[in-house]
Amino acid sequence: MEKDEDVKKSILDASRIVFQKWGLNKSTMEDIARETGKGKSTLYYYFKNKEEIFETIAKQEFTAILIKVQSVIKLEKSAKEKLKLYLITMIKEIKNTVSIYPLAKGELKANKHFLNEIQKYLADRQEDIVMEILIEGQKSGELNYLKANDLKKAADVLIGIVRALSLYLFFDVDDDEQIDIAVKFITSGI
Amino acid sequence: MEKDEDVKKSILDASRIVFQKWGLNKSTMEDIARETGKGKSTLYYYFKNKEEIFETIAKQEFTAILIKVQSVIKLEKSAKEKLKLYLITMIKEIKNTVSIYPLAKGELKANKHFLNEIQKYLADRQEDIVMEILIEGQKSGELNYLKANDLKKAADVLIGIVRALSLYLFFDVDDDEQIDIAVKFITSGI
DNA sequence: TTACCGACCAGAAAACGAAAAAGGTCGAAA
DNA sequence: TTTCGACCTTTTTCGTTTTCTGGTCGGTAA
Image (cartoon, rainbow over all chains, first blue to last red; front, side, top):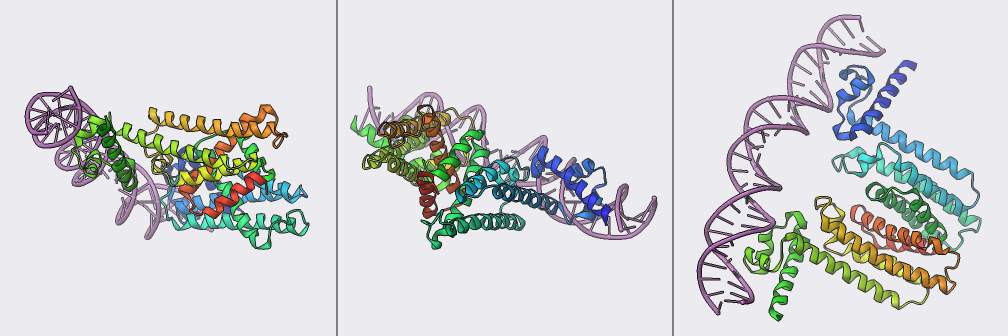
C-alpha cells in the first residue's frame, strides 16, 4: 500500500522533529502524536512501540551516512584518499545526526537490546567499507606494507578512531578545522 | 615541619585509596578520615576542604604524568618518535590515573572553578611539550613541511587527539594494542 | 602553641509515598 | 483498513521527611 508507507514516514518525520527538540527520554508518544496530527493510539498501529520508532530512525540515519560515505569514496582512486574521505565524512555526518545524540549521551538505559544491535550493525557495515578499501589498497600495492593478518586490526582501529573523535566532538569541541587536521595526521602521518 | 608534611601525605594517600574505590562523589570525608586513622575534623586542619584534597591529588598525578612524558621523550632524537612517545605515554598514563575518572565522567558538578584551572594547567603544559618538539623538528628540517604558522594548530590537534582517545578508552574500550596502532597511524600515517 | 577530636550545625542528598504522566492495549466507530 | 477514546499498568515526578555529609567551633592534651 502506498498510503501506509506515507503515514509511517510522516510519523518518523514528526518523531525526528520531536527527538531533536527534546531528546529521546523527554519526548513522549503524545508529543509525537500531536506533531503527526494523529491520535496516540494510531502510532501503535504503525509501530510496535517507541523504541521501534527510534530504532527505525537511527537505522535510517546511519544507513544514509554509510551510503553517503560510499558515494564519496567512489570518487577517489587512491586507498589513502578513500580512507581520508571515510574518516572525514563519517565524523562530520555523525555530528549532524539526530539519533546519535541520545546514543552518545547514554540517554537510553544501557543494555537495551536494540542499542547493541544498532551498534553492531554500524560497526559491521563500517568494517565492510574499510576492509574493502584496505584490501584493494593492498592488492594495488599502495598499502603493501600492511600484512594481510593486520588488516582487520587496522580496520578496527580506524573505526575506533571515528568513534573517539565523534565522541570528543560531542563533549568538548566544535571545530571542523581540528577534525580536518586530525584526519590529515591519521592518513598522512605527522 | 617534617611531621606536618608526613600527615598531609598520609591523608592524600588515604584519599587516593578511597577515591579509587568509590569515585569522588561517593567518597566522604569520614571515609577518608577512617582510612587515614584520624578524626574527620583533623582533615580540616591540613586541608581547606574536600575539593582541595582532590585538587592536590589531581595536580600531583598530572604533574607525575608530565614528568614521565618528558623523561621518556628525552630518550629519542627524532621529532616524530618524540611525538609518538608523547601520544602513547600520555594516553596510557592517563588511563591509569585515579583522578581522571571523575573528571572524565563529569562526576564533579560542571563549572567548578578549580576543574577548569586544572584542565587549563594540563593543556598549557602539554602545549609547551608538544610545541617544543614541533619547533625543534622544524629547525632540524624533519618537519619542515609544517609552516611556522600552523605549529600551534598542529599542537592543539595533537592534544585534542590525546583527550579524544583517552575519553574513548574510558567509555568504550580497554585494549592497549588498539591504542598502539592508532598512535602509529597518527605518527606515520596509514 | 601545635595537633587533634567530639559535638554540633546547616545544607545536600536519599528515601518515601502519593499524584501525575507516560507507554501501551482494546473494542468500537468511521 | 485506519483511527481513536477510554482504559489499564508501569514509570516518572514531585513535595515532604529523614538521613547523611561537609564543614565549624570550642576544648583538650602534649
